[in-house]
Length: 103
Image 1: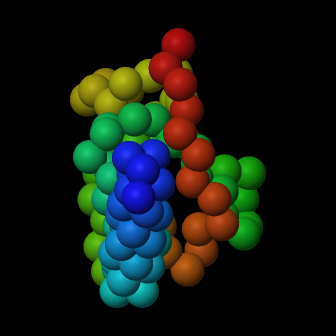
Image 2 (image 1 turned 180 degrees about the vertical axis):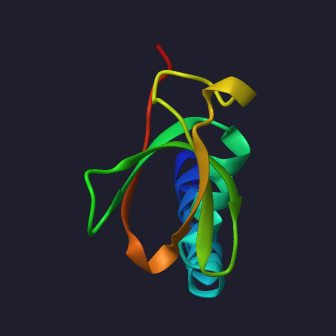
Image 3 (image 1 turned 180 degrees about the horizontal axis):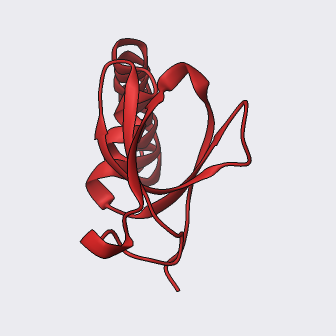
């Protein structure tokens, strides 16, 4: 067996293992896992729900069935004076969360 074929086999095995772990995480955590990663990044986001034009802010917390969003303009960092309000958004109402670049 050549070195290239061994590398290809090992790469395929590792890829399959990574996909299996990701599927298990998605099955147990659902979208919460991704939203928690966004919350850790502290990046401004746009949150689209079914009944409004969208919300902008920073995700502060992700609960079992809600997201706590500090509402601020998309171009501002989460700082005291920039935060207009803190909203609880039900996970079931969220259709899309998109990161917003600063500036």
